[in-house]
Length: 90
Length: 271
Image (cartoon, rainbow over all chains, first blue to last red; front, side, top):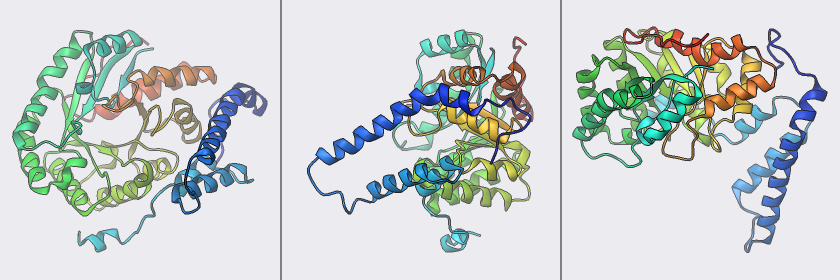
């Protein structure tokens, strides 16, 4: 989804120049977190949360848009349209 | 710039915070009833809390020229106790004529359980019977998507509910579109860690426009920042957005929504 056309748009160059150091800092935080996990005792293979982080990072690197929304949905419990019937609520 | 914070829990803030908010341009606020940090044991605890919201907090705010409004309910965390919830819901009408009450809220879901849903529906019925506006709490983190859709299901199934009189708060990238598309108002809650940052809120304004959209600080017991709305104002200014656009989000939209309640009077704000 693109920006509301009625609003002023910043160029890609301007967005990147203004946001680069913020994004760089966030990547470093994430990298350091992964380093911390690697140094910690115990196995990480079965941890659901780690899998979610890895899948989230894949979304960051793919070529599709709506990355924030897709990461949110990845981290969300699914919705069941029949929930009301299952709860016995009418 | 003068602004309104449509969702801030001042019972958890100091008097110094009121002064700081006034200095930052806050001219009015609305405070939904919420969790006290622990589960309360009786309906009398809620009666005292509602007195705090309708009598004490307006006076504390007035010392700094801020108009204080409120919303009443038993929150979703405590709705697991169905019998207590029903006692509280039965008591709420005692306070609906207080001069700063805007409606029923913040009602919603927390862990999306059957009991929470049952009490949500009973709050919606209360609002409909007393012609009250509604302020909605949507769940956080992994429960938000599922819970928001459940809440919207329940609201649209009640023909008495006017969608333009319902504010659905804590929307994020994966819930905002459906809330707006279905005709409700949406609120973005600015929070340091678990909710939405000012930059992401500015992104949503740029993508979804300014109609039926507001921002708030929550300002609750957790790590939160009561001056988050001025942070959003700064972010929008930094991106080159007009004063008119910013004012619509932080002042005009709250006035338009709250004006549907008989108790709201728009504060005098600098243009």
